[in-house]
Image 1 (cartoon, rainbow, N blue to C red):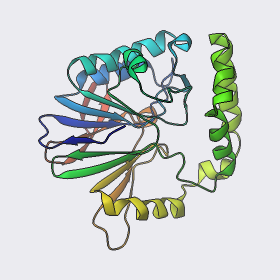
Image 2: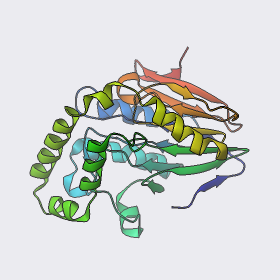
Image 3: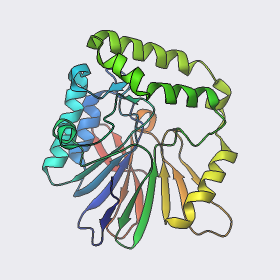
Image 4: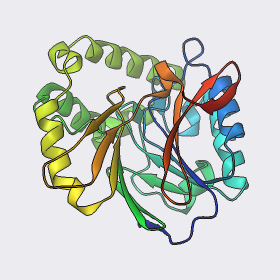
Length: 259
């Protein structure tokens, strides 16, 4: 997928990550309402883990999925770039975002790994972040298996409810393993990652870790920003036409500045 070059932004850039939408803790209605409240949206980047589990083919969608996709479609219909970067809870993804999938999914860009955006005089990098901790071998093996074409073909043939149940069960079992990697933030691995990507950008945005954290490296003016999640904090980052960044929070039905 080509990089996006916005030489003269005439709207705002919004970044959201890790909503883990479900029917209870993170209802779709709040998320869609937030999307509708975005002021002057030019580009919206979502950094993965949209639902608790999402099987991308429409065969597996419930009303929850259709509601959220409709919210993104409304943004797209307004002329907004809608960029989706795949997370570890997003499964059975299209291997190529071809014309067929572009008619199904309400995104202008569908990204599998890292992605870059030239925004006026700024250059930003984005990634979900689940592969940064290269020492979490058990998770990385699961990631490789779950994105294997044989595994995917097996799931695609299943009845929708059975496939969703198995995927949720596997994810729940995985959540109870490797707790040492989930409890402790991988500071060393993140520093190494920052050192490799920051020389090429003004700022790099990472999801996955459900934290609000800045990572800097010696001799570099750029910053890596680990983003706060939507799931627990209901936060959205807004970037102005000139690159100024502010944190917004959805609270009591409205989206406003975080003080």
